[in-house]
Image (cartoon, rainbow, N blue to C red; front, top):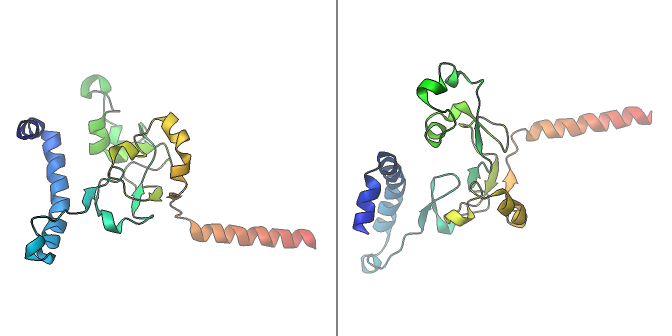
Length: 179
């Protein structure tokens, strides 16, 4: 195991990601360690995980149905964005790379909601620690066959007040038709 960890940490991106996850998990682990009785410290298992959908840490015990805000689509480059104004693919390489998606979120659009890559997720659901259940990474076939699982997840409704106003406007139009 040690050799695998050393090999993984030779990659600077993996090392940075591991340090980021550690910085998220460490405060919760320290707090929980302080709260536990001394007798059970050695046997204690922390219920903290990293969500594979939104990449934040979460407590397995407090994982409610609306804890995770995520996108379930892919990111496509927004070539009209100022981010790519001076980018020449012949000189700088392709725009649509995993590295660019992480470094230049604002230069991409989510396929699930047409929002910019740096905007909050359009879906609400439970945090997921099992990579096999990551709704962002499923193939299209798996997504259609697992629609029942997704029924619990909700779309984020940022225009809730506007929807109520639209319904009132429709009621007013119906009243005018009745006259």
